[in-house]
Image 1 (cartoon, helix red, strand yellow):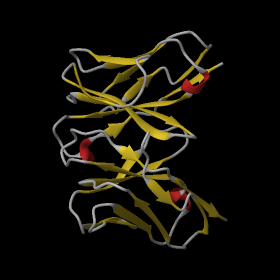
Image 2 (spheres, rainbow over the protein chains, first blue to last red):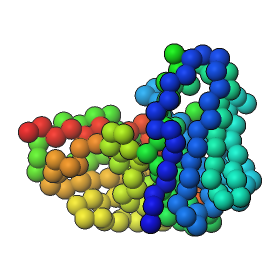
Image 3 (cartoon, rainbow over the protein chains, first blue to last red):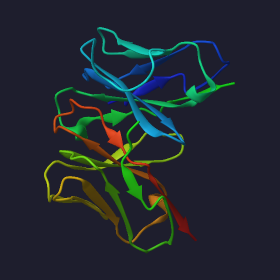
Length: 114
Length: 113
């Protein structure tokens, strides 16, 4: 069974640009969560989608948005990039409505903003 | 954003030694999780705890859900080189994957040859 896939793995952008990251969950999983990981703030929850609906949202500005498609694949978008957006962006997939031991993280997308 | 207080921040130990780390929160959680993250990878779940007072083992790893529901502990016995990595605790307010995870600040484990 294939794991969680995130593309691209590495990305370099400049300030002011926008970026779209993709997450393909494990087959059959309907929930996708996104986290930002930085050395200073650690792992911070961005948002979670379940069956194409945003179910939970973290405390990030509106520049951070996401969506989920009918095949459960999810994308997150960051507009007007700032230097502080440089981070590892992780997604986690789960069947939904299941204990946390059925949630798995992808390898992440490393975003560098110059 | 909120983070759980995890200690120690880093550990330098010799192979074969036991390791202990803990995580504390100012609020109650109903699920405690322990993850390990290696360079270039996402966190991998080691142990999940769903009940106050619960003690759960996974091989050489043992974790406990504090009875106050505001803390958790992870022990690694007889450490080996592949234990190197960053260990994170995480808490959730429910048991069924419906809530966001709040993560600890991490404990970086280094094994001295």
